Image 1: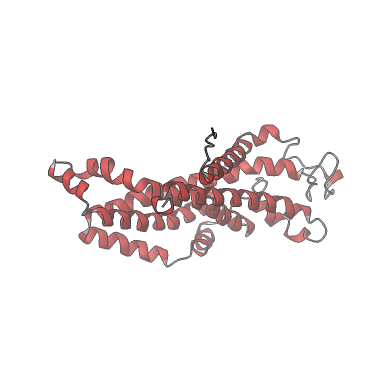
Image 2: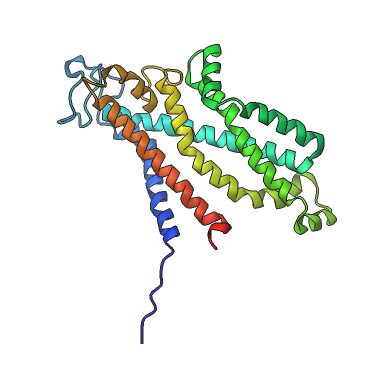
Length: 277
């Protein structure tokens, strides 16, 4: 008799591998301060701009601070701010979009016109404008990015809710007396949650890139914070003499963004029924 060999779903295997890598990165970000071999803020001019090798495996910066330690500690800042922005924008946009799609009429028109106005401003340009008015700082940058980024979630959730307003199961729920928040919580939200989760997962990498880009311009994290984008900003004038100052933080951002983007694609492959046909 031939033994039946169970073939594992390649999409699920890919998802498990990427999820493991993402959890590993999050774990490193949470414990980076304990894993760092040196104090990321302590300056030692006797070893400034030291090449990678020996005790400093990624080299040192202009103040003699260990770059590897700063990358480990900066991971916590970059990850926490990114997840905070993704959580705030996804929840805010989903609630606003569901409200517009469910109520319809003038409420829907007003909310969507305001959303369209905000979508006319590129998020990075808007953040630069806010930072110029309020002053550079991580709080102002996070506030500016969050204020603009929720609009895509609002449009997505509004479209999904509007498309299901005439569905049979919602009509049956209305006839049974379900209204308002109960309708949204029991019937609408569970049906749009997979799509919103996919968008939020895909946005982790984009949000981290946006935050790092503004830090690279000197608008977000301020010294002596060990944040990845600001580490790139500090290394601009040393690109030729000490390229390792830019290479290692850049690799950290690149690897992280790639893993979360691929994880988002994998989540979409698993949760989107149209891709499983």
